Image (cartoon, rainbow, N blue to C red; front, side):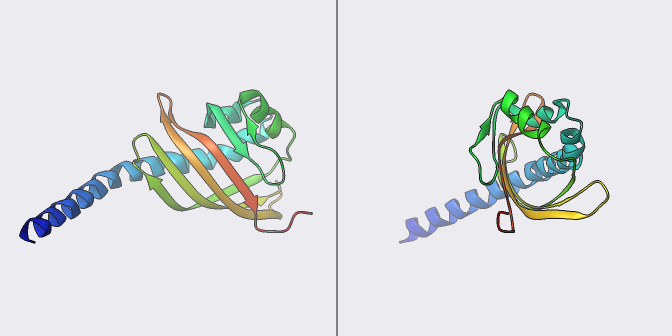
Length: 148
């Protein structure tokens, strides 16, 4: 019984220490992800492929009501065919070690260039920490409204 209590105590201490060590990493990752999210729509609106700088080379988008869009060529085509908009992301939660990968859970609000609200919804992004910084690896999003 005494050994079990000591073992449980050590395990709890280990988990607590790991959580404390991950916290600074998540704060740094959050800062980088927030910065990336701030410029996301501007890059998409350029229609010159610069949005690809936000994604890994093997990234996939999972847009609503359509098949996945994978790879640089398909992702560039997806954004070139889209409307010019402003998007604001509000991060709700980040999960992960903050060193190699992080999952972002966010809400978005999309407006036209004049500020008229077009849509709002939710986003799940798996981010990878690459040699070039944090990049989106998987990007899934959907509206909070029924398909039209």
